[in-house]
Length: 371
Image (tube, rainbow, N blue to C red; front, side, top):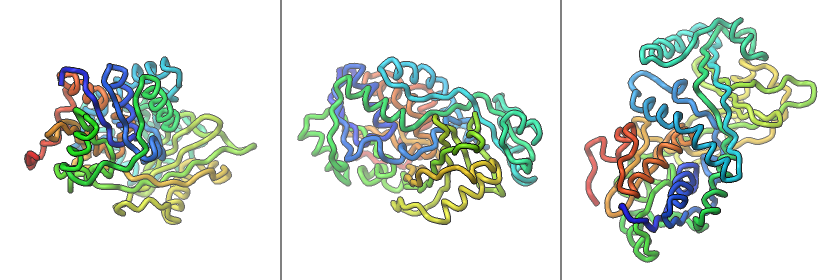
């Protein structure tokens, strides 16, 4: 694929838009197919760029890929800003709070694991944690300071990527996905003279190609958006992740006193409704960590469908017959956007993707059948 290609991208979430911008800026012809660009799961994400605090023993390849992408994020954001739109990158870092002894023990396992890998993470007691981030509950027992994990305003980012792609000449078609089989994808590509089709349709990617069937599934995540009112404490300065009686919760600050609160996680197919139980769990968990939110204005409730894989690694690479995959990014679509876009661009230009992307190749489980 060394010549400039006529590329169709199915899906305009953060992955599809990041690839579209990178590819069209590099001289490829790009058409993005999506009925509502930038309004899928990426629109309701928390915006954490957190490979370290998302890490867990046994998922070393996930951590390596995430850290590789995190290293690319500052330059990625600066280049987007140079296009004329600020993507809202925050360098403030992350704190991870433990509410009770069991939660503290779980974080201790994570801290020991990360230190063993040479990652920067510091355990502090509850008093030190509250000194670092005022407003945390007196019941918080302690936590981790992770200066390297970042955050981004997901909605600013999506708007910036779409604007940059359009500025360089990407074409957007507000159509439904091209089909439910490899045959229909190839037929659509031939009719429109596309050289390559990239499947970046998130949780719907499994319906578009048999090599992704049963390998990508939807995981529902609910979020709340709140806003500080006059007389209340402002939101935390940093992202606050917490474990409250075994349930994860995160609070990600935004501009103008706003706060994104998430995230539940359910196996519920393609249901994207917000449940009363989910909203209650998020509010109860967050209030126990940061009590001031009880007086915040509730601005929005929303749910998105993450695209999950069995091993939490995405699928990035060739499926065959001129079809590429960039899907299955699970909770890390925003984090992995730079490295995924660079990997796809390398494939289009006949180059070699970044080394950690090798672990995300679509045939890694040995069951791939050529179509």
